Image (cartoon, rainbow, N blue to C red; front, side, top):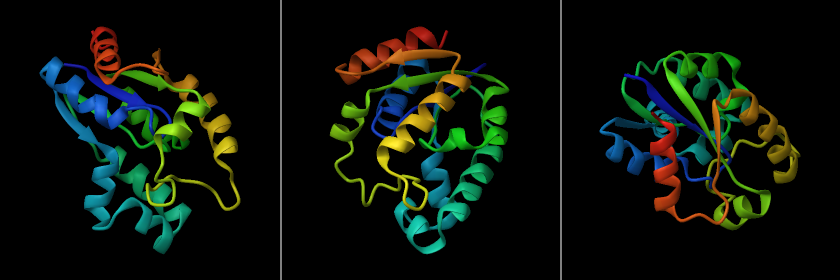
Length: 164
């Protein structure tokens, strides 16, 4: 059975809606951010602070490429799309859904920017990251779900509809 892979900006609802969609679809659930944390035995922000951008990106790619999921909803970290290798692995047996939100919605939803573990290059602004990732999400998505101003339940219903 196919996997459902959720991609999108930080705060787009990948983890929150993903676990609920997995329940509705009778699928397993995996959050790749949690896989990274378990592998490195520290929170995402600590990995970024102590080991840096390149290490984090490599750890993310390794965690995703080692994932052998079947019949699973996979919530990716927002930066997963930076790795063509990781995305190719995820797309092998999955429908990829991009949970699209506007820049304003993203900023409103991520009040904990300094501790959340958002992968930003040295000197990169949120706006630059948003623009760069948007193009990547659109490239890898099989379907795009607009999630601005939507209740969690509505987004979950749309994930479920588009997972089939």
